[in-house]
Image (cartoon, rainbow, N blue to C red; front, side):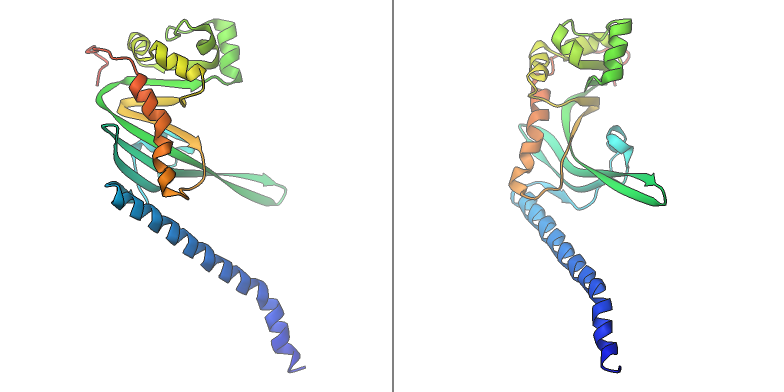
Length: 228
């Protein structure tokens, strides 16, 4: 019996030991991943943050102000760009059990050369499509039937929106070349479902589609009362 007690302890403690070992391995992998991103940032003259806070998280799904993880900021094409890991969590219940699901995104922020009234282009959901069919287009509609059926333009100033959402930008949206986006002040923001940064060399690629939006935004000389 005295011999069986230590053996029994090994069997009972086995799962706990396995959990500890797996947690240690996961932690080491995560440290190594962040170290690679930090080294990439330093080598390319970018700023690295392991965790960041920014007001624009309230424009992301979940609006989790503590949701930014690894974040890098640097110059691309003459513009300041921030690329960040972002997450928020939701819970669902079934009987006595509760499940937590983590939603992960990569957020991209591009700073424009000057501020603009609030503006956004978003994909239409079913309710938006139904509302358009029922009530017709809003003043921010572009007049391009294909674009207006797939996307809606939200804006503080309809005239400014029509000037900013240029025909080349409309065509890029129709072709699926650019993401939905929002612009507040001079902060152009987009996001997409994604995991974490595994290959640092792929990081600049996340900014490409939104940089394309910045390049295609129509040049306007706006100095109205809603300009900020």
